[in-house]
Each structure stands twice: as structure tokens, then as C-alpha cells.
Length: 523
Ligand code: FAD
Ligand code: SIN
Image 1 (cartoon, rainbow, N blue to C red):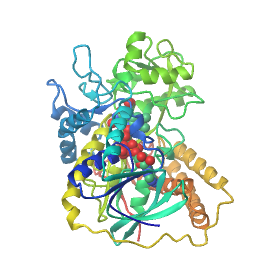
Image 2: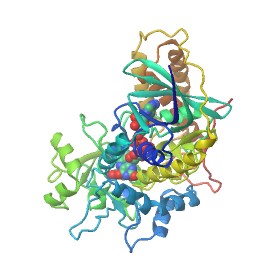
Image 3: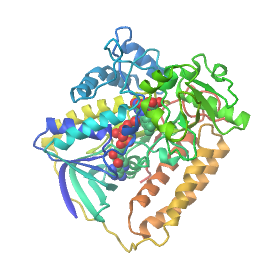
Image 4: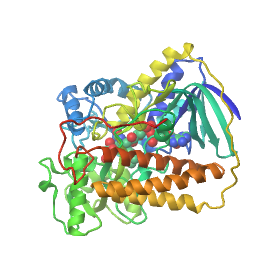
């Protein structure tokens, strides 16, 4: 089915929604179509807990925030980009406040600024521990009221239509009506989030299958720094808890990591202990677990803060843990590290521009140079709103020169309804398990080579299945997951050093020649 729009935004997280809101205002005569493959709420943005980093107090300064970001990024941040994004933070955050986001205040009526790993100052604005949900709800309410924005939920982008480094739109599966639309647009913007579902354990929701990164790769864009997949140190460890994060802000308020016998260990790894950058804390937990043979460590806030403090500062974590019979005002919280954030992505300018004409990528799917080899906590929501702003200004200024060009219908070929759906779940499980074991927190050359062999084999099988059977969301995701897993493995093999999140026992030192990894599809 042929559909036309001026701008096609794929993704309804903080970056997609912020872009839609701003672009609709700057370009009121243009039509914007925003699609999401699940409900609008379902994305990492909604689950963000800790908050959004911004220099807000006089005791803080942009220079300090810039330096903290560069230190966490371990030599691979692009300083120009870091400056441009962080200096815009107050302006963008004021816009969130204008649409109704009420960041938590302290008893004196000032914003209650949180602290997280790697930050030298308190600078995290938050809405208790439910910052993402609050921001998303306000953005959704607003965007739904804007006339030139149309929203389609449960529409899953399958692939871009791109030719000769130019993008014309995307093929999209309307899951409820089982129709494939070819949506032609002046510009297509991927705001599809991360790829945590590549790993067995992740804090990410199910939508995070790396679709945007895989689609942009197939369209000819360069993918950068994918070996830097960030592991969050504290994901709830419980057989029935799926992907639940225990916010780093809890360590910022004094919670201590201990082994299951109650022994503290972070003093052996970094002078900042619990508030060391994330890569260091996750690796420390990994070492402790391997040393002791335990399957988790514990995070203890109950011994250091009163029940009323805990309940008022962390109501979301308190309520969720209680569902699993863990009363965090009394009990230690069982935690393990889990895949959390994709520091790499599609190589872009701050405004989302890629090497493929009329294709833009913003948010977690993009690699702007802000995060380098390791993201500083709470810099991601910020990157989402800043890049959406820059992207909206660029698209609005180009709009009158851009044309919509229709392209050919999706060809189902001889595809028939699937008779062997088990292949999807089997391959998905296999990828997630070997990525966790071989391409996880600690890597070796041998483990990476094993992973490469397996992904090559699975990719052949998945490709064949993809063309033989009728398209469905799971299959689209599996194919993308395999593509992104392969890119991570190849990037990790090519990095002959340990830096930031990438830690390889066979190359434990840093190389002086280090630079960003880039991967491009061979044509
Ligand atoms: P997302 O919010 O993930 O949205 C992606 C959107 O793309 C979804 O709407 C999805 O449906 C859509 N989509 C994906 N593929 C397709 C497709 N094929 N077709 C159609 N639609 C598609 N960062 C911080 O800065 N501070 C925090 O406190 C913080 N806490 C976090 C807590 C958790 C539990 C997690 C998982 C992450 C956290 N992060 C935090 C990271 C941050 O939330 C994310 O990086 C950020 O929200 C990503 O926003 P996004 O708009 O790029 O993508
Ligand atoms: C957290 O609340 O610990 C997550 C913060 C982030 O990922 O930036």
C-alpha cells in the first residue's frame, strides 16, 4: 500500500517525540507521521529512572560536566560535540519544564539534584525514580494534540528504501491489519533506541532489538563504536523480574555494594568506590562473582537510609521490589550487571545527519561522539532532546527544497506463512546467550572468534528464513539482532586494546593509536 508523508519519524521515545513536537511547530505546513512498533510508551525512555544531567547550580560548571563526560568516555569523546550538547542542556530542560514536567524539589523548594557514577557534582534533575515515565507522558499528551502529526502504533519498520546513498522512505508492517506500507517521505528519521535484547541479561524493554542501526547499515550508513555496549552494574536479580533496573542514584545516596556474605568490595577497585564510572563497577562485580562463584551481589541501602527517605526518593524501585517480596527499607537488594546502553550506533552529526541523504538518526541509535568509549550516567536523555532540537531545525530549514519520491511496492516473492516459528526463538536465544558469554563484560580473542563463527552460521540460516517466510515482527527483529550482533563482534575483534567498556584480557592495555571503530556494509 502506498503512503506519503513529508517526514517519517520511526520511534516514539524521548528523541522521536521531541523531534515531532518541535518540527511540527517549525514546519506547520508539513505532515509528520510518527510510528512505533509497540504502544507509544514502550521504549527505554519510559523506564528511565535516574534522570537527566544538566549544570543547574552555581557551584557546578559546564567545564566540570564536560570533563566528567570526557573522563568517562576514556579518550574517545569528540570534545566539540560534548561541548555543544552539554551547553544546550539548561535550554532544553527548560522546554521540558514548560510542557509540565515537574522535576523533584527539595524542602527548600530548589530542584533536588541527584548524583551518579562519574559525576563530580550533583547535577541530575529527576522526577523521583520515574523520570522517563513522567517526561514521556507529557510529550505524548502534547504530541497527540498537534494537528500535523499523525501517530501509528504497532507499525513496525521493516527496512528503508535507499538507493545510491539516498533514502526515500521505509517499508512498514501494520501489524494489526497485516499490511505492508511503502511510506515515501522527504526525510526519514530513525529514533529507534538501543539493542539490549542482543544480550541474555538486559535492563532494556523488548523493543530494543537494534532495528534502526541494522536498517541504516543496510542502507549504506557507517556504524561506529559498537564494541562499547555499556553494562549497568545493578539490575534486579530475581527469577521473575524481567529487566528491572535499580537506579544508580541509589548509590549516589549512599547505597553500598557487598558480596552475599555482607563484605564490601568496591574499595579494592577504585577510589570513588560505588560512584566509579559504570564500566569499572560492572567489571568489579563480574570479578567478584567469578572469584566467589556466587550468582549475584547485593546493594544495601537499608543500613544507611531511613525507610521514609527510601520510600520518598525511590518509590518506583520500592514498589517493584516489594512485588518480589523484597522490602528495600529492610532487605538488601540482589543485583547483577546487565546490558544497558549502546554507546555506539549510526555515525551522525549532532543534527542526526548521516552519510545517506535524507536519512537522519537521533537518540540511542546514533553515535554522535558524545559518549566515546563509555557513557556518563544520565547523559542519554539529554542527548535525545538536544539532537531532536538540532534535527528539527535542520529539517525545517531544508523542507522546501526536499521532494517526496514514491518507490516500488514491497515484493513478497514466494514467501509463505511460517511453519517453523521455533527457528526464531531458538536463534534468538542462541544469539543472546553467546553474546553474553563471549562478547560480554570481559572478552578474549578466542571468545570473540567463537562468537564470530556462530553468528556467521546463524546469519545464513536467518537470511534464508527471512526470504522464505511471510514477514512478521519477530522475524524482522531477529534479522536485525543478528546484524547488530555481528557488527558488535567485528568491532570488538578489531579493537586491539582495552578501553572504556571494551575489556579484552588478551589486550589489557590502552593503545596510543586509539580511534573510533567504523563498519560499513560492503557493496
Ligand atoms: P527509546 O526510548 O528506546 O524509543 C525507541 C522507539 O523506537 C520506541 O518507540 C520503539 O517502539 C521504536 N522502534 C524501535 N524499532 C522500531 C521499528 N522497527 N519500527 C517502529 N518503531 C520502532 N538515560 C538517562 O539519561 N537517564 C536515565 O535515568 C536513564 N535510565 C534508564 C533506565 C533504563 C531501565 C533504561 C533501559 C535506560 C535508561 N537510560 C537512561 C537510557 C535512556 O533511557 C535511553 O538511552 C533513551 O531513552 C533512548 O531514547 P530513544 O528515543 O533513543 O529510544
Ligand atoms: C540509572 O538510573 O541508573 C540509569 C541512568 C542512566 O542510564 O543514565
